[in-house]
Length: 464
Image (cartoon, rainbow, N blue to C red; front, side, top):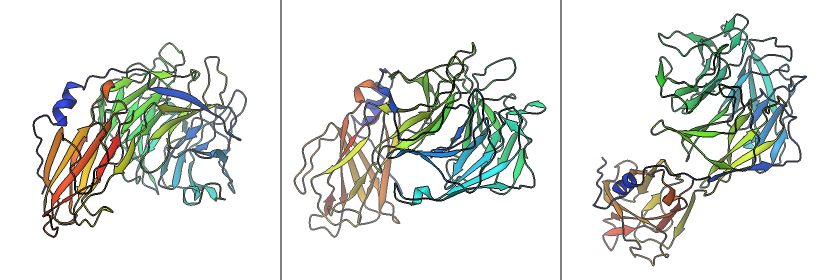
């Protein structure tokens, strides 16, 4: 059972007052130089975890496989075999395996191949040798040969991949296909996005968000949501764009982002837009730095550190306004990274805490997001109070309430887990950038000599 209550002056009222965005250039493009890197290219594919394959420049298509991970940079991935050179293909990663479909060679000849890439690179120490391999699959059914389509796994279970659109030998497609790990199945829907290529398809929980792209007459600014069975239209993008780079910024950011691309006039862009998962609103992200305008690039999430810091955005490749292939790598860095620290010590028994009191947990939060603020107590089904105050306070002495709460949540911990949690909504507001939140929790503990337990002080720094 959960009981939630907010006292007068709670953070909920504070959030409403500051919910109007007032943004300055808090994101900065920084070039990344590494000892090795893929050759300049566009039309390559890059998974959310940095696995990169193929692409082309002005004269050739590529068939090399690379991985980007932050502490090392670019590393070539050794493989016993490889798909043929291609561009305009689509890939996404499910846990440790990467699915790839389609693409075209340097002469524009399309294929309908399904490949799976497997590697152990995430399970070995950084700098150690790893193994990887490509395997061509032979599903009983498959989409026709195509390029310029989009493909993505669901972000919750990574058990189903969805493919949409692309240019086939018969023209542009508006087909929707699902891959279950063994076979492809075409999904028949009563409503569908128009046929297109050059669009983005990003995971959205168990759903998929499609936006942008072009047909033979126009560049699209529409957005669509697919729930595995049905397509439904959503509010449009801020401007029409095709061949933009898109990624789900997972974990603390909980947003979808697109970068660059070509607009309806054929001009390549540097614009960065994000879409909040909580309210579905597109908003511009002003940036500093000299990243070149481009289309046909890729972006991914990159861990800065784990588990309590942010993930930044990394961009690679594309082509510039003159059609030249680009081989540079950039990092989009926020001014404020999320942070977490524990001060002082608590008192009272607590099975989930090193301090003896209840354990207070809020991993990472940034502006415009909702985080789960939770506490775990030694005794199940006990009354728990979580207090929160803007600003960092000094480390408390043992058994000392260290904050004057601006918000208090009361709840009864779960009988099974001993946990109680509330949603902490962080508004998108300029005054909150980098602000510290001090938090402390108290719980009734029958086995404590004091009759209650008190946590150490948790301090969270808000990120961008």
